[in-house]
Length: 287
Image 1: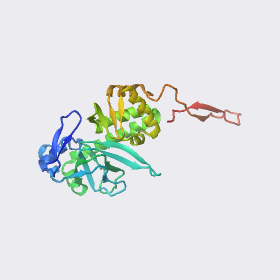
Image 2: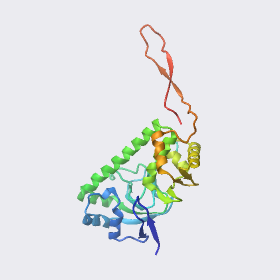
Image 3: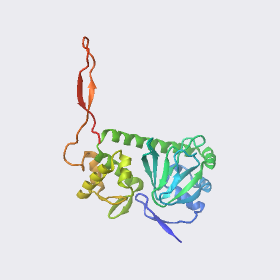
C-alpha cells in the first residue's frame, strides 16, 4: 500500500494511506485546521462525514478564478498557490497554502464566484466539502462561521502587510519577509535546511519585482551562506541571518546606494504670485 509522509511545523512525520480515508481518519486530517477550532470530536465526526477525500496531481487546478463557488478544500499534505490574473494577463501570487490550510473560503458561497485560482504545487491530499452541504453544517455549528471570519481577517491582514512592504521596502527586505512567511506555510526539511518549492519567477510575482532582481539577490545570499538557490526551489540554510535582513534591510543587493527617483512637488501659490515654484523632492526607492 502506498504511503506518504506529512511534515507540519515541528510535528513528527505521520504516515498516512493514499486510499480513500475513513471518517475517523478525516477527523484526524481536520485537526490541524483553524477552521474546526473549538469543535468537539463528535461534532467533527459529523462534519467529516459530509466531506470526501481527494488527491490533486502536481500543477492541477483545485478551482479557477471566476468559476461558481462549489467546493471548499482543506489541504492535508502538499501545498497550493493562490493567485489572480492582472488585467494584462500576468499571474499574481496572493499567498501559499500548506497542510491544515483551507482554500476556497468565501464569506457567502451562495451568491459568489471564486475570486482567485488555486493550483497544487505538488501532489496533494485534501478534504473537499461541497458548499451546498457545508451550508447545513454552518447553520448547525455557527462556530465554523466565526472561524471562517477569523481566517479571512488573518489573510486580509497579511495582504495589508505585504502591500505596505511593496510600497515602502527595498527588494531584499521584501524577499526576506516573504521567505520567512513561506517557511511557516510550505517549508519542508531538505538539503540541510528548509526548502521552499517556488521558482525565482514565482518569488518575483509575490514580491512585486523582476526575475533578474530576485536572481541577483539570491545569488549574493547564496555566496554568504544564508540560502541555497536551486532550479525550482530555495533552501533556507540560516533562518537567523534571514530574519536579520528583515530588521536591517537592504542587504544582499550590493553596497552602492540605490538611485532614487525624484518627483515634482508643486508649492502653494502665495498672494501676488502667478506661477508655482517647482521643487524636486526624493520619493521612495523604486525597484
